[in-house]
Image 1: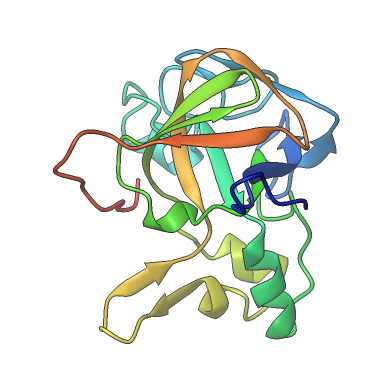
Image 2: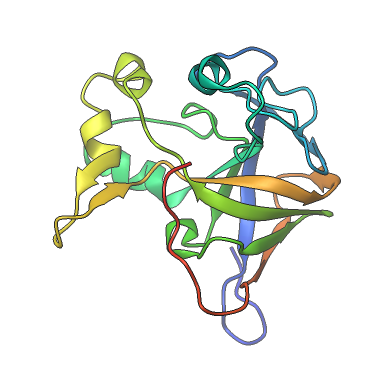
Length: 187
């Protein structure tokens, strides 16, 4: 990736993914369409109310705060160093990014991606399905930090604030919410 004129490498989209079924991994696409207030067109998790099976069973009328799932592509390099070969889309994300520390952004951060805008709602909570995908992987993405706090490394969840199209190579612009900022927690 080339550096901008000010020397800062811009955040960008590495890959985009969708799955019409509730499968664990998602298939790569040339582009995806984000629909305001709903999610990724054609994805099993698209809708104004929850689509995650366990959440539907608990209360199907809950608002869908998990319309779009983003993972920082740097995670795949970390997993490879630990002996786990994982490719974009295999952990179920809709958008894989590069050059952006998604996990440190506060709740309400708006990301302009391609022609779409998403607002961060929280962290993805990794579950047993990750071990079903690759035995032992859950310990790599759900662990305790040096401070004893649980670290969830499998990306962030968002709602779509403005419809648009997202493609690999698109830039990602960050707009922080007004202070005080609140850390992302699992949603």
